[in-house]
Length: 286
Image 1 (cartoon, rainbow, N blue to C red):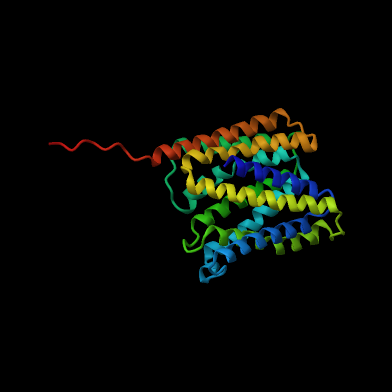
Image 2 (cartoon, rainbow, N blue to C red; image 1 turned 120 degrees about the vertical axis):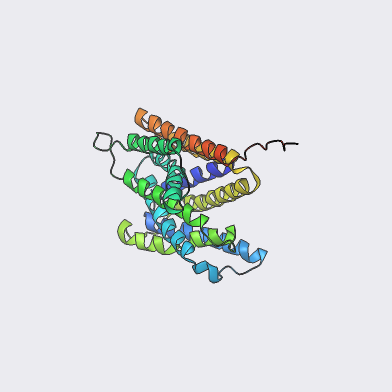
């Protein structure tokens, strides 16, 4: 899980670097193409059809739509705002998932987790600082992206069990190709990038694939309640990369807000683990 979070943080950093030499639209399209070719090729090597009747199930179409919203919003966020700010807001995604699971799937959420969700949202507001001097309107792109990712994760929960992770990954990447082309209408036409920009995009693809592989192995082989809190190491990596690669120095509001979001998320995960634990069996009376 830690390897996956390092991969995702590096992916974000290289997307941000690539945006310095190429508009975001072509970057998203190339990123989607690279990821799709990898996962589609891996699926072909392992056998079985990439596209089946279940590929067009409502949950998959919903997942594709929210993948587009999540990726477009978050990529706009990391290119227009400091990486540390965007990553801090992204940490609220598991809280949004818990909220969505309660509203959409009717999962029972007690008052403690509702309180943790509320505290997490407070942390997001501290990072955003709406109406205050440090407020950056572009940060709202990150909020939209975070909501999109949470909705995508809910769609993944409802996805047909006949579809494996390679298929879902390929679907998630392929929709970014038309997304990037549409974004090009707003972010400007593509100029011929230099070798460095191509290298940045290639690095983003490689680290994105590494992140996906790491999180898949962690969630399959590890105990979910144990490995999930380590998702928040992504923020640590983002803070380090933001400082080392972009000279970012997060202010107190970003650090405090990020800490509240992370603490709320970890509490929610631990609380869910406790509620999911089986009750100790009572001895059978003789």
